[in-house]
Length: 492
Image 1 (cartoon, rainbow, N blue to C red):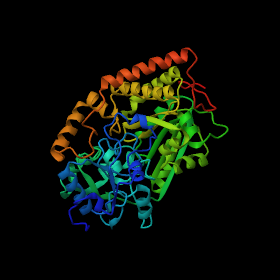
Image 2: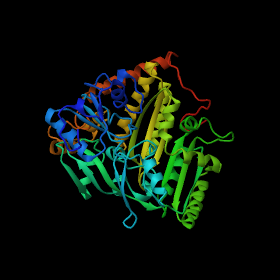
Image 3: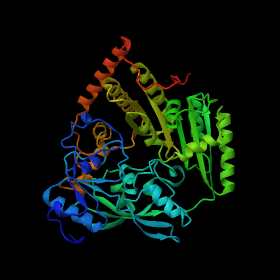
Image 4: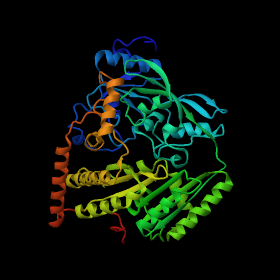
């Protein structure tokens, strides 16, 4: 069929497939959660996967799907952990990665017009050849797409403390509504596609801001024995005149797992990485200020080679942890900096009582807010250990809401929390779907429909936690993924 022809039968579309291997590949994400975790969904496997390359092809798909009431699931790089692009009622997964062409680079107005399926790292490398870079990017930029980070609400990543969230760096975008209408939007109109998991339509292309390649990019890494002092240094750095482009805190277990060990003389339990970008003079002054803040907080400077290793891994830091453990459960929060320490302490306390693994990293998003990610490394073959990690994350979510935070990524699994704790957002998502997608074909069960009740889930995790503590008391609960370094609540 030609791009402008209506679709009469998906079997005739050369850029769509119903092969089982394609459907399986496009129906999951990076969590590696076992099949039994999907069984509560209505239909977790896509019926078709399509790879359109133009807005007209997407419009034809949307028109066909609307006419026949077939679900449409937009998909970027598949790097999300929360089922944002996983089917729940079958349907057509629109894989956008073939829509990756640069349409125009405007060097005077400093924007690039690019298709929304472009991968962040590839696009940035292409721009660098012309003397420009993207000001912001997610920490999964090695594989995630522009529209993918937009859909989950990119507020904390590389560059965001200095240049703002992703939506602050988009000039305009071309979208396809669920009924197949193609339009260009800008300004406040774009907010309906920011953090809404594709329930309002498919983003085809966007004009993304760019910056001239900075003169200098340098940073430091310090270790701390004390969590409070590490967080104090982080807070002070977030308030400096020249903002870093990257400010991250990790704990010992996380750092050990992603790097496969630590330098022999390491004594710290918490690690802060800071990177600045700009003129050589500004970067040098910022590093001097940062080093002073770290030293006042009793931090110990780590070798520059180890900092560089962490900086080079910035694009794969989340996915690298997944490579180190059989099954990875996680939650990530958008929370004020001042409310993070109690959550970390609680995480260690629960993990100790459950005898399970836990670790975290935190990335600054703005002067007062951070993305705080908690991980429960496990192996789903050890059922109770795996479910206890999920129970710990559930308890931390409840505490996080009491601390004034909210969930950073929503997608499928977290919709139940939106309905329980974020009633205004839940109503807004319902209103958006009613206005933009009255037939409900766009990414069903994301943000607006809870398949599992909160009461049932809360009871399940409460019971699991009780049984796990009983196992530990009876010395039947074992930590199956130990590391050769022990710590609890900031003490070796």
